[in-house]
Length: 194
Image (spheres, rainbow, N blue to C red):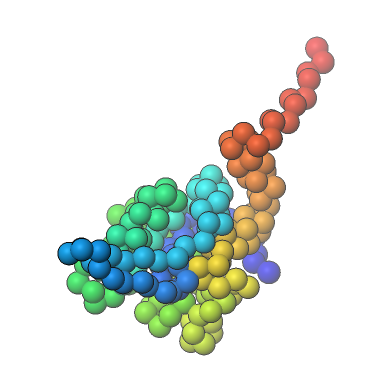
């Protein structure tokens, strides 16, 4: 169980992309003269991102490779920053550290969700290291929390629920989510007797 004090300290969550936000599969081909790439993402991760943002938690994607599919999904999820290694070298740690310094966020205020060996340098630095169910054994060993759901199968939504329940704000945020969608009416305000 995640401790409330740790959950409340988290200001920023970094997400690996391939194997965490997606199921790790990458479909590559050509349409005419243009190379195309497709990835499978899970729709529930979008609502998880909304709930985390509403709780004041920043989400950042950190990938070892550049991908237009990642950029499109980040835009849909309203994730404001995507860190991609343009060189293909996969150096996430330096890029992530520079982003934290620029935002004024300490490592002790961060969580990171990973699945593979390239995520270990980040997982060993953050306050809340998280592995998805399909992570390699080394990543699971470094994690404080391991999701029940696999990457690309709603694991990010599970992370959101775990953190927000530990903060004791889950029910209120779900109500706000439904109200904003127009699916429920706002609860009546208590009348003030005067």
